[in-house]
Length: 583
Image (cartoon, rainbow, N blue to C red; front, side, top):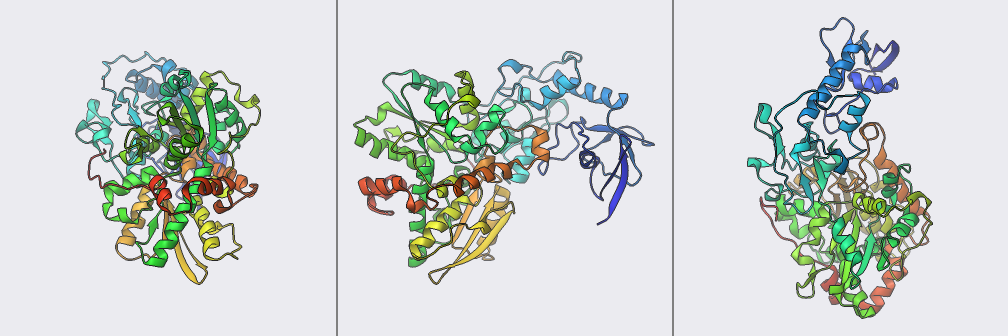
C-alpha cells in the first residue's frame, strides 16, 4: 500500500495515499472541528469550519476534502485558523434562530458546541433574518429552516444513503435553503419517514414530531389505562441519553423508569410480538415455498421500507409479507385479546409504543391498522427513544440509580429471537431459526451468523429438510433499491429477503439517541449497539421464537395456530400503491 508522510502540528504522520488532512489528523489523535462533514454521508467542504494552514500554501485549506500530500506541514490551531473558524461560526449564527433553551438539541448541538469552544460573539454580524414557515404537516418530522445551517448533511442522507431525494437545495445565493420540490410541505412528497435526515442534522432544524404531551395527558386521565411497550433495540440505546456507554443494556432500568411515569401505567415487552411476528412470518414463508406462492418474500416489519415499496416499487407489493409489524401486532393484541380477557373497553386503553423509528408514527395512523370497525387506532402513540428519554428527564428520575425491574405480566417474557430484531439481519435470522425447526424437527443450528454484519448486501444459501433456501439481507434504501433492481431483472433468486430502511437496522433508527460528530465519525456505534442485542440473545433462556411460553399461551387462548383465520384477522394486513404522494 502506497503511503505519504507529512507533519501535523510538527507530529510526523504516515497515512495511506488518498487520505484527507482530516483523516491524517485523526490518526495522529488531533481532532479538527467540522460541521458539514459526516463520515460516509457528506464530504463537500461547504461549512469551512475545518480550515487549516499549510506551510508554503496560499490561503487556508479545507481539511475534510484536501488530500494529505508527501512532505506537507499542516497546522491546525494558528491565529489565522482560529480567526477563520470563529468568523465562520459567527456568520452562521447571524442567520440562525438562536432559541437554544427551548431547542431539543440544547447541550447536544454541534453549532452550540463550536460557538462555546471558539468564544464567539453571536451578535457580531447583524443581518435581516429570513423567516421560514415551520413545516410540521407530516406525521413524523418537523422541519424548521430558521435553524438550518445549510450543511447539506440531510440532503446527502436522503439522496445518497436512502435514494429518496425528497429534499434538496432550493433557490440560489442568499435565498438558498433546504426544502422539498417547489417549496411544498414534506407531507406532499413521497417521503418514507425513515428519519435519517434527523440523525444527520447537526442542529435542531430537523426533529421528530413530538407526542410527549399526548402521553402525559393520557397518564393524567384517571379514566385511561396507559400501556407502554418497548421495541427490542431500545434496551441497547436508551442509556446513551443518560451518558451511559454505548451498547449498555438498560432494560431493567428502562422498565423501572416507565413504571414511575404514572400510577395507571403498565409496561410490556415488544420482544413478545417480535416472536409472534416470526411465527406468522415463518409459517407464511413455508406456505409460499410449498405452494408456489410469490417469492421472494420480503419482511414487512419496517414501515419505512414498506412505504418505500408502496411509493417506488408498487409491483413488489405482493412480495411483502402480509404480517403486521411487531408494533402493530401488539396494538391489535392489546385491544382485542387483552381487553376481552380483562373486561376493558378498548376506547379507554391508551397504547404507547416506544420505538427507534420515526416512520412508526405514520404506521400508527394507517387505516389498515384500525380495529373495532375502524373505531380506534390499535396503537395510539409511537414515541421515539429520544422522546421517552425526555419524558424520563421531565419526571426528574435518576435513571442510573433506578433498580432493575421486570416487565408486567402476561407479556413479560420473550426469546432471543425477538431481541435481535433490532439489528440488521436479526429478523431473517429469527425467522430462519423457527422455519428450520418447523421444516426439520432435528435441526440444531441456532446462530445464523452468516446473515449478520455490516456489508451492503449479504446473501446466503441454507439447506433445510432437502429444501434450498436462498436469503438476502440489506439495510439502507439505496442498497435496497440496487437489490430490488437486480431481482426485477432476474439477476438474483431468493426465497426470503430482509430489508431495513435505516443503515444497520433499528439500532440506527431515525428516533434513536443522537451521538456527537466525534462519535459518529470515528466510533462504530452501530456495532456496539448491535453487540448488546446479540449478547442479550446468547443469555436468553429461550432463543427460538417458537419456544416462547407467552406466544404459546396466546395461540392456545386466542389465535389457535399461525396462519389460522383469527390470527390472520388480527395479525396480518394489506398495502397500497402510493405513487408520488405521501399519504
